[in-house]
Length: 158
Image (tube, rainbow, N blue to C red; front, side):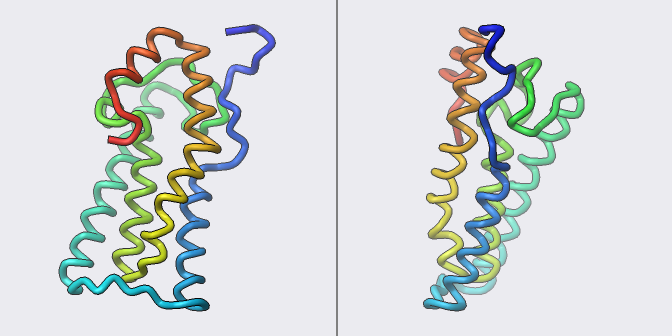
């Protein structure tokens, strides 16, 4: 890394707010513009919502536990002293963002709100642009081949 470059990713907006904004926009669109119900039986919808919520929470909690164990800050605009390859990071390079996406999907299923689910691709694109892309540039700059090897082995999402 160049000594003049800051030892952090150029993330300036908390990614969690992208998902929260998408959920909020979905609620507003549903109430103010046009309801977009999912048309799924309640048992299927609620069961899927619980499943998505449990998996999403699991990804987030296990990733946060690994950050805590390695004494790292999970905030993407802080320095990353080492890469983590254990737990959910074996399956996805972005377990916390994947978890947040699953929680957004769970909210849409729970409320039978097609807008919340329909806005998920936009939320994922927003998080990619404001957080994932700057994080990937930073990690490649800082860790070089180790990060490139990890990126080749593990998908961005799943």
